[in-house]
Image 1 (cartoon, rainbow, N blue to C red):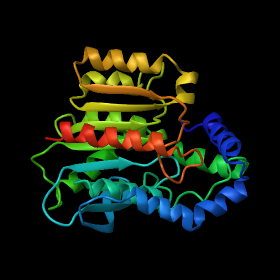
Image 2 (cartoon, rainbow, N blue to C red):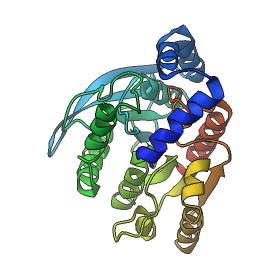
Image 3 (cartoon, helix red, strand yellow):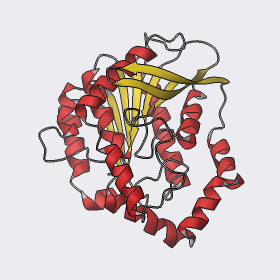
Image 4 (cartoon, one colour):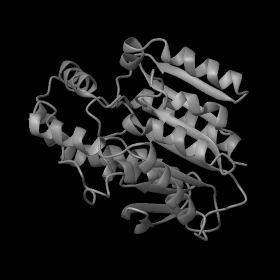
Length: 293
């Protein structure tokens, strides 16, 4: 979950494992070492084409990043970023996915408030103003905005020549956008064939609109990669998810990544875990390969 506790965990873990201050870590992520890491993470086979695009929605115009193989039509994947929004790390992740044979749209979920970037570089989680700003942005989104946005994005994707509309599409979400994946898959059950969440927050709650309650409406296979510290806070969530997917007779992989902290997947994260992130990435590729047919 992208809440204050998770942010504190990310900062504390980064300090304990690297010995770097926030300022020192920020300098590293802006330097050549960080960019080299992103480039290595993007290495794959297919040549791609990429562009910044704008997509009309009922509430305005979304700025987004669209990347796809240079030739042919391929399954679409809609990527919902974490609380830090559309930024270089998610562009690179989108490109890496496209190099594996997918037409990928990475959106700015906060377009109603401002264009990307929507978070300062290397935000200081100890800064009350930064923390308040991030949580305020997250608070502008809800199930209704998610559904209208998903409709607009899927319609846009299906109008692109690089998208193979005869094959199912996938959708992924990180941190706060984990629930977006469930809502998108439920609202577009005949179109979405695969959903994947990475350290997704709030997937199981006691509210009547809990994302896990949408599983009976979903027809997609699912991958849920859970952070170790999220599991410690809510150990029952994985069992609830497994039981709900099993009852709906859906193929689902729900796994706790032991030792991986909330936020471990994006390569610019303060708690980025290379081995765990690569494992989650490989599971995503296998998941898409089997489900997007």
